Image 1 (cartoon, rainbow, N blue to C red):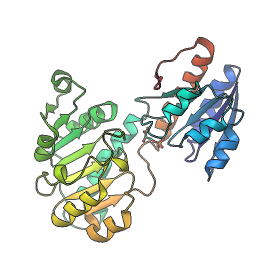
Image 2: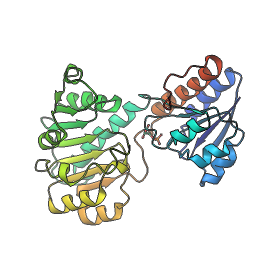
Image 3: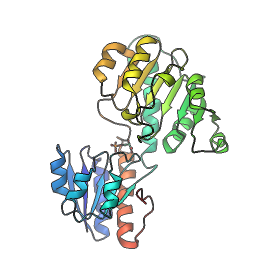
Image 4: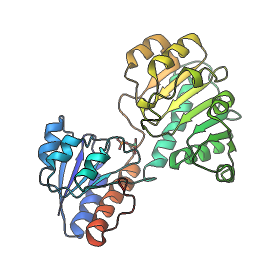
Length: 306
Ligand code: 3PG
């Protein structure tokens, strides 16, 4: 079988080597399409692929249409808003992700961004510490729980809101439970977002929630830019000169954020949460193994389009 790794933002070399080893050891062949610049290139490359590994690369209905041999696509990572699952299902293609494999990298970045913002973006001036502050974690999945654990290590008080988890499960980790999203925002000096981008969450973080945050609070987004209502966020951050926003990755209206908010805002130019050698290796090798097990035993663990 031909396995194509198509990554506009390439994996670390060690990850590509590891993927190749797994694929070839299982009797398949590997081809690579890295740093491509148009969907056409992806469509041409995928034409004779039996399996596809991607990161945030957009696997649209068009791409699926062009992939007439494709049997499985694996998003090496957590969020799968880049996959058209309906198109995959319509063409009998199994779609998977690799949950948890890059979570630590994202969680560490969230803490790093908090420190960066609390220390004047590493420029002279008096900053403040994380110790003793409250962090509210919106969605307590793989990344959210790790952020909570790291924050506890810094001596922070952790509150979490997750409608899909029992209070007991949240409390077992040492975090307190917020009974509503509103309460989470009202009680937190930092709110860290770990929700996926879905039709329900897109544009859901706006004025109503952010304006509830206490004086000097900071919103951290290492999830997806799409979950933010950018106009409302800009409005509330312009009105409230004490609030801050830090994002991986920068909003659509990044220039306006920079201009209006100065150092109360920072956005990474390219999504870098999972940009560590470890995360690339964990997610890339997991994707390769999942594909090989699918071909050898029909294993469909982590299938998304059931
Ligand atoms: C994810 O959903 O796994 C992260 O956002 C990482 O995305 P990336 O592979 O594009 O860096």
